[in-house]
Amino acid sequence: NCRQLTDLDLPEGLETIEQFAFSKCERLSRIAIPLNCVIGRDDVFYNCPKLTTVDLVGRIHNTVASLHLERWRNEMNEEINRINQVLPTTNADENESTEAIQQWIRSVIRQIGHYKTQHKELLKDATTILELALWKAKMD
Image 1 (cartoon, rainbow, N blue to C red):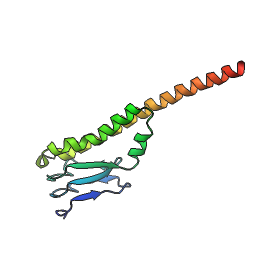
Image 2 (spheres, rainbow, N blue to C red):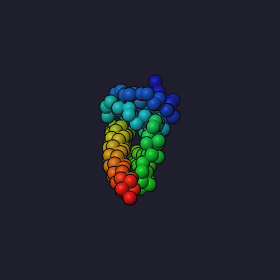
Image 3 (tube, rainbow, N blue to C red):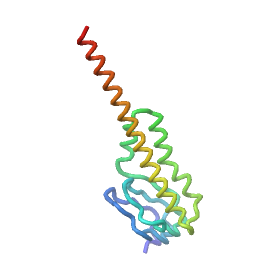
Image 4 (cartoon, rainbow, N blue to C red):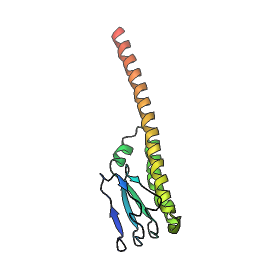
């Protein structure tokens, strides 16, 4: 029974949140979820009308901080914060909260993957330029 639960930080090692795990946690207003945690079904947060804040925990902030371009960092921070602006408008009785959280986590993971790929390409290009400069310096 989680009717009195208002705030929850899930452990970083948690892999899955099962069906109905937080169903009818009517006072739950904030939850911190590890980025790599799989949300099992659409009804995980069924009837959680006060759930307005979802935080991603774990190494997500280190990953974002390490992104090469400031624009990427800003975009990722905006995406990470977006759910807390979207979630309050969802209808808890129709499982919209769970669906919104699932979509948001997938979006964050996709964006991180995209930026990591771009980051690797930039590093590869920079390495090539550095190698050419070193080669040229040896020739002079």
